[in-house]
Length: 124
Image (cartoon, rainbow, N blue to C red; front, top):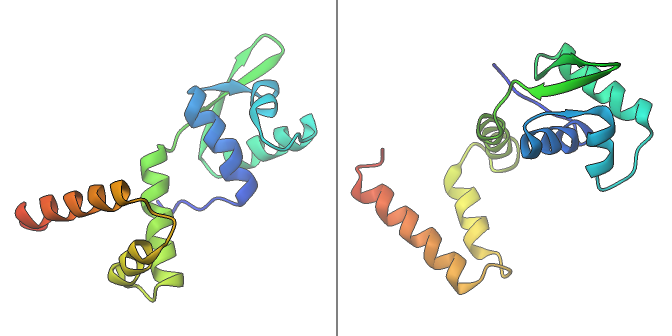
């Protein structure tokens, strides 16, 4: 399944991933930019049509549950980023990442440790 979110959909999905499930009002409350209730509802309905969320009835409200895991969405987004921005090269992405001046020495050490573990594991 190809997973693709608009920025607004990703904001809403992030709230659902954090909470596990939520009503429209709960999602709206936790979004950084305060959107109209109907806008949040529209985004959730669109996500439901795409098969990324489902809802259950809760009184007069609906409670929305993510059907796509954050990790799966992250893998898919990263693949698209590598393909579209880094010409399909994970090495170019990594070069860009480690060249970033905003990474702390500790973050760079953790990246090195991950790479060394991956190499020792035979690239698996």
